[in-house]
Image (cartoon, rainbow, N blue to C red; front, side, top):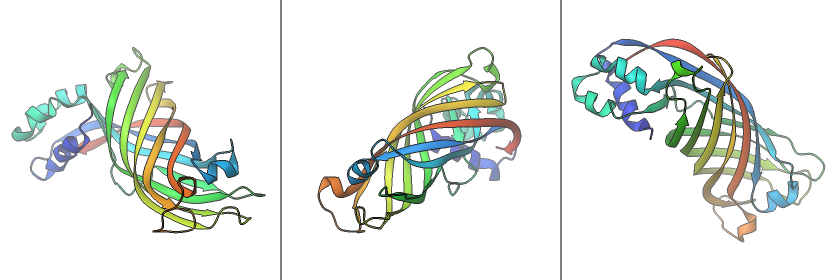
Length: 233
């Protein structure tokens, strides 16, 4: 299990001990399709809302931590030795998803953004270290993430009312990641997101379940490039 909150605390210890290490940084981008439960699903059917999914993070694995354990402040070393892997973003303000899905004919569209400020890996199988990419070229990940999403929902017909959706939520995501080379990877998968419900056409009002935005499913494909970067512990 990935203890992101703990490793973040370790990285913040650089104010106490500044020791450089070289970690791979992963930059990924690719298309995503999202299907919303309720009236939006009835409106669009099999046609998803389209967007782009992103990631920018340092990949900190068990081998890297073990090799650099002596560079950490002494009070953190025992905790760090229990971390298997983590992915640390340089900023929580980097979006994880941009929705760019114009309306057409009678089909509703939406534009918006999702941030993923914190996440936790529940299951990680396959490749154990970034350096072992040619031994085990695949990795299966199941992640749970906290979300914040804003969406502008609109339609060219009165079937779907204009909505400014702004809600926190939770996500469960399944990812299969394949190493094409050490520095180029491909990932694909999907998941589901659950939000505090918001009624279409309103911000505070609740109503019938079918009129609420609260649940979606999505699928994605992403191309990744990795390169070394020096960070301070």
